[in-house]
Length: 285
Ligand code: PAF
Image 1 (cartoon, protein in one colour):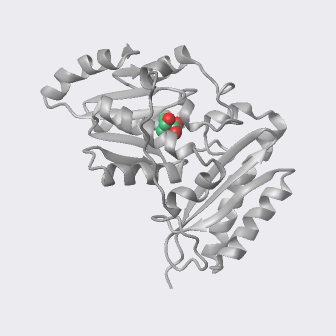
Image 2 (cartoon, helix red, strand yellow):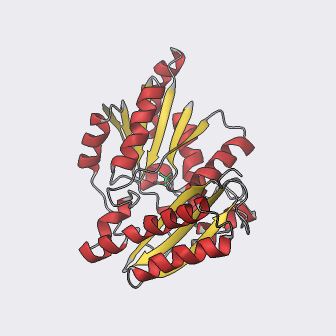
């Protein structure tokens, strides 16, 4: 695997591949890689001739009181994992390479789909995500870019950006990878002490309870949300940012689950904010 820290060096590596007609797969990450990321890398390796992984803790997607300073960083460990998953190139630029002095161009989506849920609780988050993703897409010019379903709203907004800005990149969403007790893999799981780690399994348990209740005939979103809330609160003290049952294409709230929907939640356990989601399909009558 080749490693790059500058845009020009990465471009020089990719240009002959592109000229030879090789397809390029791209996996953007903030490092602290886990099996969820590696599933994306393996998918890119399987689907494309060249797989590029970026490792960049993007400062512009963190709010002023968020965890930018303590976000886990382990470039050497991450590089080994990327190589073992078959990546051909690792791109780990410094912040100045991506945001040179005077940087002032932003991608924003100004509708309810972007402003709800994560957008409501982290008002500048998606502006940072979309801007860095567009920059990376322009640098790498991938045929396909791979995102995890765990960040459901992120994947939706990035796909929409690609469509609305006529980017040639196909945005592929891959399934959530979970720990044995159901906890969705996340770099932030490293913050959890043993008690908080145990409690964190309540997120996926709550979502599974909602799925089971739907399968048993409960279609009221309020009732399904109440089940999830009860499961979260039974596990211990936590701060719930939101529990939502929403349309999977627009994230508009759903009252009755009579077609496909998605249940999404964000919860703070001790000092760690976790998100998760589950697609809900009502049983056919
Ligand atoms: O999902 C993430 O890790 C980040 O939001 C991303 C897509 C790498 C952009 O910084």
